[in-house]
Image (cartoon, rainbow, N blue to C red; front, top):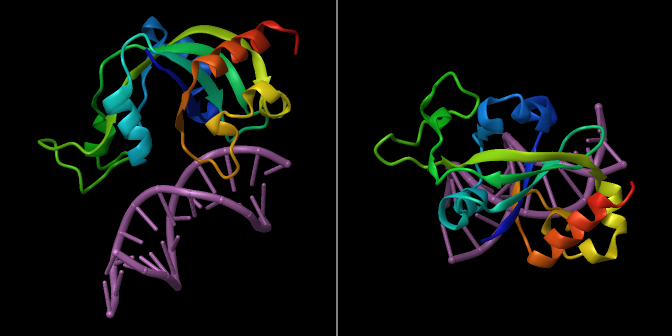
Length: 155
DNA sequence: GCCAACGTTGGC
DNA sequence: GCCAACGTTGGC
C-alpha cells in the first residue's frame, strides 16, 4: 500500500471532470515521463491513496482524495496519430507508456500550494521541492496523514 | 509572458 | 559516455 500525489491541469481534467465521469474514474493518460510511468507501471496497486492536485492554474493545490482503481495497462493515446500524446516510437506489441485508472473518492477543500509550503510537517513532500516537475510523486504515510489533518482544518 | 529547473535528444 | 541544445513544466 502506497500513497501518491498526482498532478492534473484542471483545464484538461479537473477533479469535477472526474466526478462527472462513470464510476468517478478516468484513465490517467498522457504521462510521458519515464519516472512517472514507472511509478504507475511498477509500484502502484489498486487501492493506493492518491492526492489529486491541480497544477498550471490560478490556484494550484490539492483538491481531492482519490485512489488507484486499476492495474497498469497501455495508454492508448500513444498509438493515435491524431492525439497530442502520440508517440511514433512506441509499438502496440511493445508499448512504451502505461497508465492506471484513478477514481476520485472525495472532493476536498483547496489545500493551496502556499498553504502546503507554509506547513512545516509537509516540508519533505517531493512536490514542494524546488524545481520539481514530476507529475506523479510518492507520498509518505506521515505526509498523507498530515495532509488529511490539514484538509480537515479550516483553510 | 517570463524564467528557473529539469528531462530528453543527438552529435561527437 | 559526455554535454550542449532544445523542449517542457509549472509557479509567479
